Length: 108
Length: 116
Image (cartoon, rainbow over all chains, first blue to last red; front, side, top):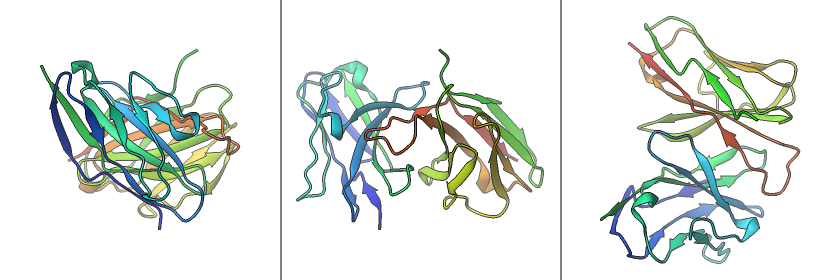
């Protein structure tokens, strides 16, 4: 079965604190993982993809095939990071399978 | 150039009526996707087009839902005999397609459907 699990519905941290948004997946093949972000009143947009091994807005995510995880991390949270974050897996067709999302709230 | 556009932005309808939702993908994108975003179900895949054909329509929840794409561009999602549980935000996305590694899907602003 193809599945993405984001165990936290809400993650609240203070500005400057480290952030880790958890994502675990289930997929029988070689996975392609993405993090999408949706800021308030904006459309869903790609944050980063595992294949690029990039850092966007200070966020990084490493694919751990042994633990089937793709956690999103940032060492120092900023208030502008407050948003809904979705982990997604690209399935056998091109469709994205999304987790249920984690709302990140960064308090001043 | 413009991103993915969708119309209408909001649609309120009565139970039992049919609705049509439109998506204009980014020019040159061969792949087009429909998703549904609702409070109870999160983001669900509905259907995927490559060109004008739909190799994966496994996410359509019932035969009341159908979609078509013409000219490899505009797509219409039709919901017949709407039910209250159809209330959601319907998102369209497009991408270059062809199973490119890291192929990014670009999302539209969505159509918020409310069934009374």
